[in-house]
Length: 133
Image 1 (cartoon, rainbow, N blue to C red):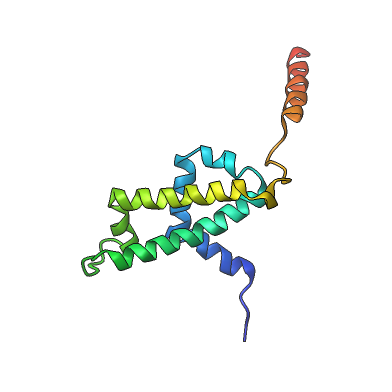
Image 2: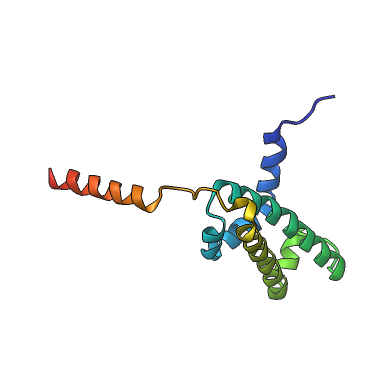
């Protein structure tokens, strides 16, 4: 029996509708990035956001009566046509980000990207380079 590698398991989850939904919410809400600004927080956020969006979609599927599949769109697309459902999912993703941001286990995580001091040093370097031309 062959065991699937981590890449074979992880990538399909991200490529499926749930990954796209979470990515769209991240793009639409720039404040999420500030909440999950470190590599560890971002990994935890995306992991739990994918799981919880999947759970909400499953709940919505059970709660809503959808017309039989006619080949035109997926059940996820049908559910997301309803603004109330989109908002429920958006709130769930935001809640995940807030919970991760408040979790003390991530308090010591370093932010993604350079800190303010490193940015200042780079600006000074770039200014000197431009002036020397």
